[in-house]
Every structure is written in C-alpha cells, then in structure tokens.
Length: 437
Ligand code: URA
Image 1 (cartoon, protein in one colour):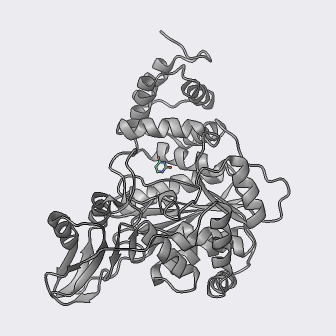
Image 2 (cartoon, rainbow, N blue to C red):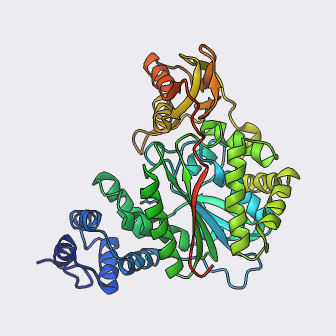
Image 3 (spheres, helix red, strand yellow):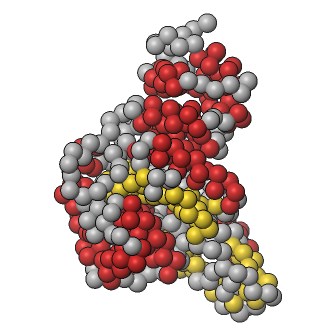
C-alpha cells in the first residue's frame, strides 16, 4: 500500500476514522504534512474529510488538527509589542460589514488587529470583496507587510496568502468540491488555523445562524461556537463566541460598495443601530479580554467615543491609503429599481439567503470562484422583521444595471407579510466564554 513522504499509510488512517476510531496528534501531523507536500493525493484527503464529516473528531483530535494546520505555514511573532494583538472572525452573514468598522475602531483605541479575511463563501459576502470595491485597495499583503502595517497603524485587513496556514487553503478548496465543508471539526480547524497564526492574545468569534448563515439553526451555531471556544482556549488564546442571528440582514446594505458606504456611516458615528450594537459588543469583549478596560461600561464608552469623534474613521482612512485604496473613487450606487410590498401588514420573516442569492444573480457576487464582481450592485433594505408596511410602498431598493422580473419576484417573496406583528430576532442569542476568563 502506498505511503506518504513521511512513512504514513493514509489508507489505514482513513479506515480507522471511517470505523469511528480516534487519530493521534502525530498521525494527524503526518497526514497534514503529506497532503501539503503532495505525497498524499486529493482522493485520500477527501476520503479522510468525508470520514471526519460522518464520524466527527474528539476535542484532542480537533486541537491537534488545528495545531498542525496552523504550523503548516508562518506564524506572526510580536515580541514585546506595546499593543495587545487581537482579532475577530465571523462565520459569514448577509450585510455583515462589522470587520470594516471593528478593525479600525479597535486600532484607534490601542489594540493591534492583523485581520486575515476571506472572500464570499456560498451566498454570504466576503470582507475582501467589499474592500476591493475601493479602487486600488490591495488585499494581497505578504505576512510581513500585514505585520508591519499593523505595527504602524494598528490594523490591516488582507487575504490569507500561501504563507499563512497553507494546508487550510489546499484542504478548503478540496472540501468545497467534495461536500465536506459542513463538519464542526473541519470548520473549527480551518477557522482557527488561520486566525491563531496571527499570534493573537485574544479572539472574538461571531457565529451566525439562520437562513443567511452557514449554520441554519441556533443549536448548530451554539455547538460550533462551543467547539471553537474550547479549541482556541486549549491553544492558549482567550476567546469569546457570540452566537448571533442571521434571520435578517445586518444593517440595511447588502452588496459591496454599498456596504463600504454603510461602514463609513457607522465610522462617522451614525449607521444602522444593529450594526453599531454588534460592533460595540464585539469590541467591548476584546477590550476586556486585553485588559484595556476594567468594565463593560468603560470599554463601551471608549469605543463609542472613538466612533463619534471620528478617530476610528481616521484610522480606517489611513488603513485604506496604506493599502493603496482611493476612497474618493468608491463607486456610487446607480440604476435604482424599487420593490414594493404586495400587502399591508407586519414583516414576520425575511429569507436572508434569497436576498444574498439575488445579489449574486445581479452580478454582485460569484457563482464560480473565477467570476468577476460588479461592486456597484447591491440592495438597500428599507424594512426589517416586526416593521409595519403598507401595500404598494417600497420594501427595498435594488442597485443594478438591469433587474429581471424573476429576480424582482424572488426579492419580493423573500419578505413574509402577515397581519400579526412578529418579535424582532435577537441580535445576540448567546455569549460563550473560554473557562479561564
Ligand atoms: N470559514 C472558514 O474559514 N473555513 C470553513 O471551513 C468554514 C468557514
């Protein structure tokens, strides 16, 4: 039977996991090494991923997988840097532009945020795609550039290069085409290997559930959040996960340039209340975890002041300029079409995924990884769950060169309108902290 370059027999490992057995840290390490150097082929890696999807992994295996994926590339070292190094990760949502506000906000109050972000995943938008709607903005910083800019300005937002957790890049691309993304163990190792390679002292996670999220139910999101917090804490990083609702978009803008505009409004001290509230909650937690504040009240007041005084906006502007972006040329939304309410009543549900898929259909997201994005395409949501609306009044605005009738219909039917008022979904459903905190 063929062995990998380091003497591992992958077929035996796959069979043991298939039968529900546990793998040792050295076996997992040899597997990651063999897959990274090409001596373990894709078909064996995808079999192991499928076995993990079906059988799961225990917490020791998940920690070992995360460790070995993390050490497949470089890790950032901060020596005795003055600023505590922190980051936030979201499992992805519709209209989720928190990173654009939070990274400069935290930098403006004394934290360092070397944020490695992703592109759109499934129907959800990606921070990198949003930032790339700013003409010239570079999202391909090397690990060294990411670190140097963070040291100088307090923050940088860029994509994962081949230097950071390269095993995850290879494995994620394989999982994407083999139906093996939805495994708690694999998702945890994938997210944490990239984030913890940044050399963090503290991490907050926004684990979303609902129609527009990777996790469809509260329960699945809580289970993933528990797994992420336990694994991250086992690796020595103080971690808090917020389980948040994606049963309606966050804020009012969905798209790319239009979301940057909304982030700018929030950085000016305005912006939608839910976006501001979630950003402040995540930021407060990181300030407390980093001992930059001793109470929630104090942390929140500091962050509010940074938003309202324009200091966070100033840091965002500096970050954009440092990464080559020209905010003055941010495309403005054009060609507006309104979608009207078909009935009078209360909005009781919004199919967030349908909104995100419509944006993709309109050209604002990718169907294939190689597709180009029209950054000007987007939606402005005028009403959210629990709002009352009159028949024939606008529900949302579409910004796109042309809107086919079926897309208009898909967007209209994404809103359920009934005679009884529904509760607003809670913004933050649960908060899970690592035990030592
Ligand atoms: N995001 C990641 O980075 N990895 C996953 O596996 C899922 C979401």
